[in-house]
Image (tube, rainbow over all chains, first blue to last red; front, side):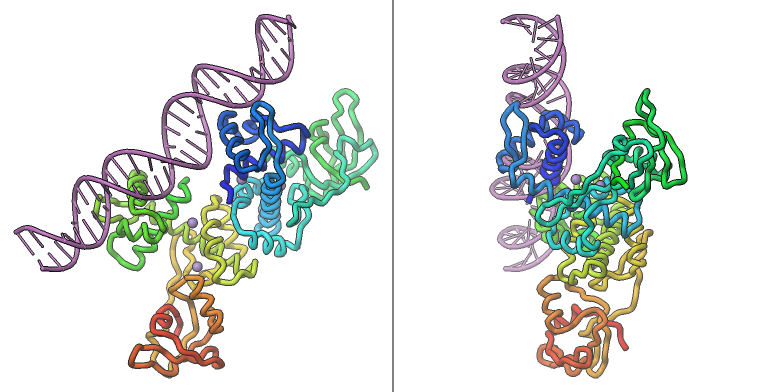
Length: 219
Length: 219
DNA sequence: AAAAATATTTAGGTTAGTCTAAATTTAATT
DNA sequence: AATTAAATTTAGACTAACCTAAATATTTTT
Ligand SMILES: [Mn+2]
Ligand SMILES: [Mn+2]
Ligand SMILES: [Mn+2]
Ligand SMILES: [Mn+2]
């Protein structure tokens, strides 16, 4: 139906739009996709022709309903495959993204449904990101970043905002994974760095930025 | 490393060479791949440049050691994914080929090794074809076609030569699958069609050609 | 409100992978 | 051994997906 490149562009637009609610710029897509802005312009014309996006020269783009559907289905497949790779093949959470980036493009509706069933309908992927259901609906849950926790309060890790491999390896080193409890012991007023207690056992210092990437439920 | 099209061409050459031991012709590859002979010629030049095949104009091609390795690794991945689809996702044997045709191109050596382990090192795929190991070695076993069985003798289905969806659906109808026992009751001298007993329960008539496609071990 | 800086598009080009039609080589048949 | 038929390659063309450099629009700063 759609090429790998078309799908990846639609996903990029979706993800960028998720953070900043305005129309998505050509340059932001190019940065996300690691391509030249001129290449993005070419693709935007094609996607607009197929009514997958609303596009006006120089004004940025938004996804049309059909484009949004393609993007969400792609994200659904990506996250289901990530669950498979971690739960069944025992990959670590920092290893799965590149492989899922390929697997998400396998075309077979039946495959996705059977995979989802086989995995017992997971609602979140190994990074804590919600997996849209068949109809494109995401499961919502209330979550805070560790940066928002007050000293003395504890949270359970639900997910991470940053998916960078080196960041995930850094968390591995600190013994932080999904389900880990984080108690904020102290916040530095100078640079907002935090002293935290990990699973009631390891004490460590993290920067404000790192704290911002860690998503928890309050306990 | 190699494109989907390059990989598929190498696999086609391998599979055609498997049956007819002479150099593989341009037209046979074109027929196998459903493309124009001219397109195959273009690809053969490219593969020869990369030393994946031995190619002389008008003389057909053979795989080089490196080309053979690529083809065998692709077949390995294809068949491992087919096992996954049937054993884990409960697809039927006639549904898995097209999906595996895509999955075989996913690039990750680690993925293949983990998948193989997860599947507990299967030696044969859902159609009874051998799965090459990491080093490209196929497991051999002695097998006969039902056409070779003498009346009164029985075999257990090990595999099928024909992978066509309609053929597999026809076998489903007859309750023939891997492991099924086939007893030859009678052979017609006129057209060599056979009356067979399936799993000791269903009697049926099959043509000589169908019998030729059914591979069994003698019991 | 000009000027300067930045973002975006256009112009023109490349490579991979396909095609059809024509030319050429090889194989088969008189 | 010619002639005809079949197989294969060459020539020329197209689309998708990229690129760089130049032109143009928009935004920001003076
Ligand atoms: Mn992708
Ligand atoms: Mn993820
Ligand atoms: Mn394939
Ligand atoms: Mn098979």
